[in-house]
Each structure stands twice: as structure tokens, then as C-alpha cells.
Length: 259
Image (cartoon, rainbow, N blue to C red; front, side, top):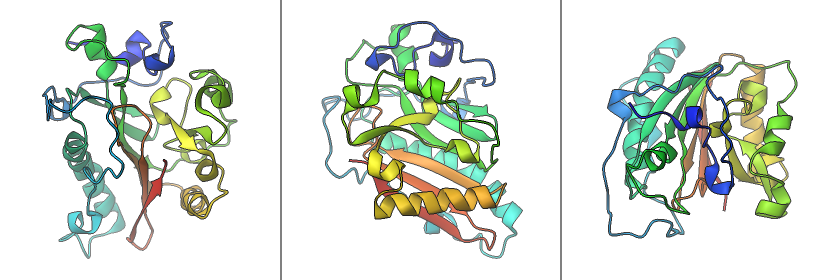
């Protein structure tokens, strides 16, 4: 069995993380047989080439929900928790022209699907590539608002000083916000390079993002998810979907530009 990048301490290693760290304290990165994919797709395309509009990987969520009308809120949540990971896996493979190693694990109230490419490099399954990175496929769960302080000390140490590494227009953001149950300490998979105006709620899109997160805070137990869409082979998403299921069974999904 291939060791996980969490166990090897190699999440974010393309940015310079090479010191072994223990990520197993609260999360067990377990192989999920139906989500482990080791296959080359469109191998003639050069890794790292940016696609300006990553249409591959988009999903019609209303179509996925067809036939589920009239179900209770809990039944809809159960359906989405069970079915969305498979839809996301297939969509991710459409936008990822390389060998993948998708693992599924639970951390607190949320489940994460992660392309653990770093473990393939470490174990020699694939050669090292300076651009291709391990990255999140999706995260889903039910909101669990926290009263504890944010673990910013770990966030600050992730890859180095934000502006020095990425520039003034960028932040280190959370796919699942700390306020609704997301974490950094022990889970760098939940961190990504995010547009500052989106992360801080400065833009119109950022305000909508904050509004969605606020709904999850005010309604504990809300089913919600975050799914990045990539335009290249790095871990920085071009687009980020955020979705939640309202108490009236309405599925609210927004797609935010992160370019």
C-alpha cells in the first residue's frame, strides 16, 4: 500500500515543504477503492499547460438531482453525500490529463477527496515534475460552527510569506472555512491560493461567498461542499464551486473565478 502524502509530510512540497510532519493526528488518509485511479489520460498534452476557460469538469447539479424531488431534507443530504463524490471523480478526470491517485478521508465534520500525486512521486510510480502538484478534488460535509480560535499559526507557515510568494492580490484561503468546521492544522489539503478580493469579501463575488458561508454558520448541520476546477496541473484552482442545501431543500451552488 502506498503511503499517503499526509504521512510523508509532503502536502505542498512543490513550494518547498520537505520536512516530515505528522498529519495523522485526527485524519486517516485511507484508500477508497472506487476512487483510486491510476491511469494516464490524454498523455500527449504537456503537464502544466494552462487552459483559459476550464469547461472540462463542469457539472449540472440540477440534472443530478432529477428524480429526487419530494424527498426529505435528510434524504437529500444522504443522496448527495453518497453520489457527489463519484460525479466529482469523473469530472476531475476530465480536466486532469495525467496519472491520478485519488484518496478519500474524513477530518472532523467534513470528508475530503484528494489527488495524492506526491505519494506517486515519492514511491517512484511517476517521475518528479516541478509543476504537477497534489491537490484537492472536493470537500463535503455538514457545517459545524466553531467557537475556537483559527489555527492561523499553521496557515502562516504554509509555503512562506503570502505576498512574497504569490503577490499582493492573493491570500491563503480555505476550501471549507474555519467558521463552519474547516481546519488548517493537520490538513493543508484544505488550503489554497485564493484571490484576495474573493477571500475577504471585497468584490461582489466575495460578498456572495461570505453570504453562503454565513448561512452555514447560522444553520448548523447545513450540507455544503467546495470543489475546485483547475486550468493547469498546479494546485491553484481557476474556479471554485461552493454549494449548500438550504432548509427548504433548495440546492444553492455558485462558481467563483479565482484567476
